[in-house]
Picture 1 (cartoon, rainbow, N blue to C red):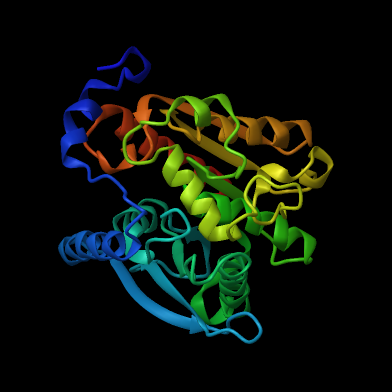
Picture 2: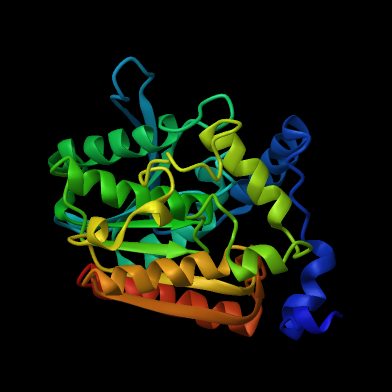
Length: 318
């Protein structure tokens, strides 16, 4: 094991079982992931949770947006909500990716969880995925009475590219005058297309996600030839927002993995939020790599999961 990659022993032992993400053959990557998550969804224990789906109006001229909803059984009254965005480099995934996690949040916090099925790049580059996320949030709020959701207590959650979308959505919702968001929970966020941080330059051979994948995903999301140029929207790339542009955002929790190309952009974003006067908490998980959340039995992941649930619970008054 390289001195640069002193992984947690439990994570290192599980690495051979974790599939690499190969974006150069996108059709194959999508098919492989769909098969993996379909099996996981079929095996998931949904006891105590009602799982359903609704469609809400999409952005102007675009199709409706599908939301998967998780609601705890036997809990009366309107509830706080977690509005989630799955990861996948802007190019992969669906709400199925986070099915087990959404069930956990719903059970542990006794809240409604809504997972948005946004359109994927490169077929649908920015701003389509973000606009879908915004339309889904608006639809959740507009139907909050029917769905039993407290519209003033909605937290955003995202992992990887989903966390980048969550950060962009927090900016967009603030600048459009709503819906109000009370918190943003960003796990291993993809926030900076420039890939110029020390971790982005150093961890070119990291497991699961590496610099090459990051470059491919940003090219797909922004369009070829845009990545790294001067004129990139902070709604697409939140790291492009200046400190003054971050003022007034909801409080944030940012978690990053130690051996991850995206590590330093998450750290930098948390520091920028703090400089803007936004309450922000930052946690670096030692010995971890991008996607280490999949190793649920590892002690470091169990600890991080418990903390993530507790942080969301505090933010939502649970």
